[in-house]
Image (cartoon, rainbow, N blue to C red):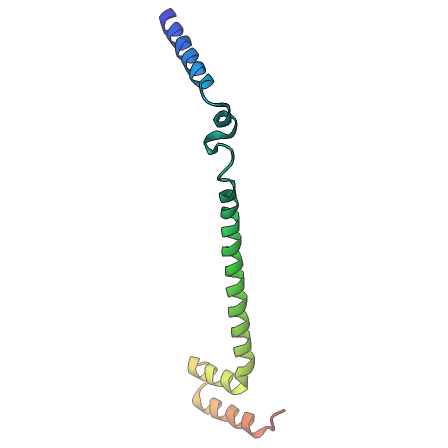
Length: 106
């Protein structure tokens, strides 16, 4: 047991001696040395900010386009969609279409 403790103490002393041989710049700043790679740390957040911004831009543009399309579709388009989905039958579609076309547009 005593020999195991002395060998562990010897390894710790060797590790401490190895650490003492490391240059001060590497010990203080890590493997990056004097900070030559510091701008790369800014690229990761910038990348994600750009990705999120792109998703927001595309989402808003798509929503506006769909909103504009729905607003310009008009009553006849809504009536055609309801008929195509089977919500109303052909006689009701024709009756409502006559009513829409007989009214003056505003």
